[in-house]
Length: 90
Image 1 (cartoon, rainbow, N blue to C red):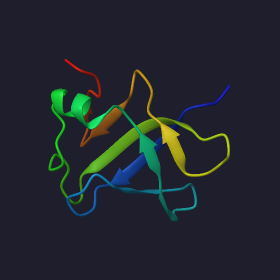
Image 2: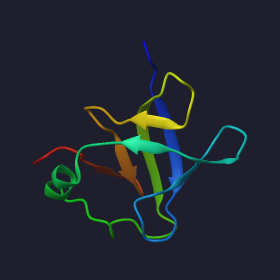
Image 3: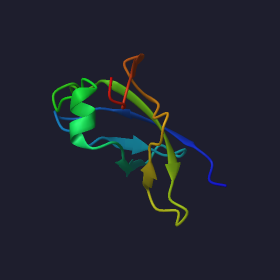
């Protein structure tokens, strides 16, 4: 059974990508699979919803290979600046 991993980040630039820090404080670029862009858009997401410096947390099921890749499954838990974000269609 794969355990969930919580990732914390600060948004950088104005893009979907965000670096995460590991337990040693080193920056690690994770790739997280979520719902399709269409589903996320209908749930209220857009590419400008995060601004540089926003605190973002996400819970993912990590790759069994140990690489920084994960899947955010239902329920997909994402918070930005303390606000819960839905990754499901309304």
